[in-house]
Length: 293
Image (cartoon, rainbow, N blue to C red; front, side, top):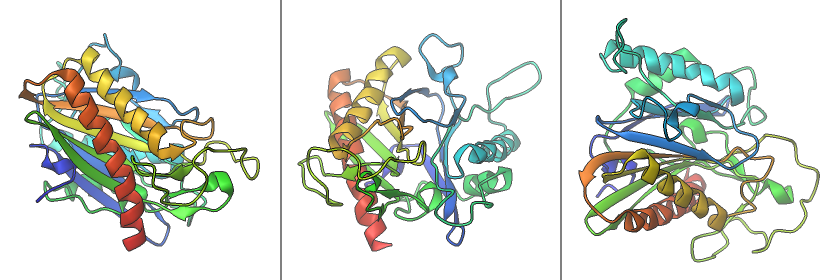
């Protein structure tokens, strides 16, 4: 049974991983038609094409979402994903031909391995070519290769990629998380997974700016317009706040993408609660799978 985000029909995930340099990238390709939005609550994000995802923008459909290591350097990996999508004839139609839309967000992993190795166009293309609808390979792979948590207490614990699925009233919600948080990790029930107090105190030291960030893609087969879809992104961010303590700090760039790519008619608030659960379980999965990697 597939309990990862690829349980949503049409969604595929691919990784490129460099275990020596401890970096990588992960691409989530999307079926059409779809609607995509995003919300950023951390104060130190690195991203590309996210302004296009706000309500009221002219283009609502995307072709892939890229999550990548390499900090801002890693944004270049989106060029490779775009080229591969163009070869496959996918993109927003223009008089000059299709232009693929690939929103991208990064994590900071430059201090984990060889900082001179960063995902670029070739690596983004490789992640795209490796995509599959099989259950997602989790743990220390792709964009999660060099991630960690628990840095608020100066006791970092390896993290990685996690994924989970929740269902409500016939609709399915899947979440994929790249976990690289400043804070400690707890389950939705409050069980500590990495140590640390339930209520965060002052940090053990003055944290370095922008060396963290948790990235989320939450997708559903339920029908949403972009305005209503923002509530799924909000509930995804709420799950980060419940499971990461602290979350959304000025040292994180926490970003949640939300995708609607189906026509199941279910009350929107019901799907939003499934999104909360799926993201929370995916965060737990990222820690447990990293331990097993």
